[in-house]
Image (cartoon, rainbow, N blue to C red; front, side):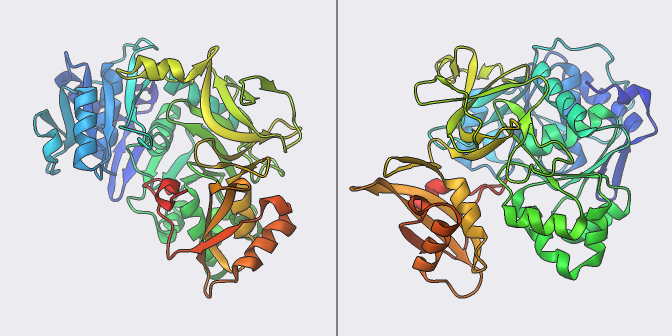
Length: 473
C-alpha cells in the first residue's frame, strides 16, 4: 500500500506541528510496531491528531491487522459498544495519552516515533480487513463498517487519477483522524502517492496561510472551514495569495454553499472541488478539477465506480434533467465488505448488488450528481412534490441576513409535510415572510418555508455536519 516507505526514505512523510517524519523514519517506527502486533487480529487506535496515530495505522495495515479508529470524544456508552462489538485485542496510543475506562481492559501498546525494524515488504491480501469504522448511529447503536485493503486502494487510486495526485503534493488539513475524510483520504492518500501529510492540529486561516507559504499544494477541508476562509479573504491578502497558489482545494463531508464557492473563486481564481462518499463506500464521485460548471454538484462517478439513480420502487431513472430526484445506488471495488456482526444489516443495504446509499440526488446532462439530501432527513414530500432540503438551504444562504441555514420537514395535515427553515441570522433576524418570499422567487413557490425558526447556532457533529435530528425535523 505504501511503496514510498522503501523507495524514497529521505522524503518527508508526516508533518505535525514541529514534528516531521521521513518515509525512512516512518518505516522503522511502523516496523517496530508491526513486530509487537504479531498474532493480533484487530486493534483499536486512540485517534488523536498526532503523528503517533498515523504510525499506528500504517503499522496495522502493514501487519494485516484491522484497525478500529476511536474518536477521543466518544461518550462512554458508545465507546463501550464499539469496544464490545469490535473486540480489539489491544489499543494503540501515544505514550502518555490518558485512555478512558471503556478501553481499560485492553492491552495497551504505546506508539513511538522511532524504531529499528524494517517495515514489511510482503503484500497483504486485498480482501483482508483494513479498518472497522463505526457509523454515527443515528438510528441505533453505531455499526462497524468493514473496509478491505481492496476498497481503500481502489478509492485512493481513483482519486489520484482524477485529481492528478502525485509525490510532489503536500496535503494540508486539520481534519479528525478517526474518520474516512481525515484518516484514509487525508493521511493514507498522500502516503500511498509518496507525498507529504501536513496536519495543522487545529484549523485556522493563519495555519492554512503558513502551510501554503511553506510548500502546501492541496487543501482538504469541510464546509465550515471553507466558510471561515471565505469570510477572511476580503481583509487578508496573504490568505488570498496562499489559496491562489494551491494546486487543488477539496471540500467534503457536507455540501459547500454556493455563496462560499463564489467568494473563494472570485478572490483566488481557484474553484473548490467537491467529492461525494460515505463510510460504506469510501469515495464515489468527484467534480473534475477545472470544471467551470461543477460548483453545487459532487461531480461524476470515479473511474472504477458505477452509479445510478432509482425511484422508490428501485427502478433505474434515466432522466438527466437536473430536476428528477432519485436515490443514489453505487457498485464497485470501493464498497465495504459488510457490517461487522450484522449480516442482516449488510443484506438490507444492497439491492441486486447495488449499495443503497440513502442519499437523494438529481443528475444533469453532463452526468454530474447534485445531492439534495438524505432520504431519512432531507427529502421532504410536500403537496405532492419531492423536495430536497439542500437546494432550499442554498437559496436561504443567498439572503444577506442569513449566516447559516438548515431545512427539515414536519408533519402537516394539508401538505403531508411542511418545510421548516432553521436560521442563524447575520445580525438582526429578518422577517420570516421575507425569507419565504426569497425562496419562492429563487426556486419555486412550493419550495418556500412554511415556518422559520431562529437559533443562535446549528447543532453540528465533529465533521461539521448539521445534526438535523436534534432540530426536531
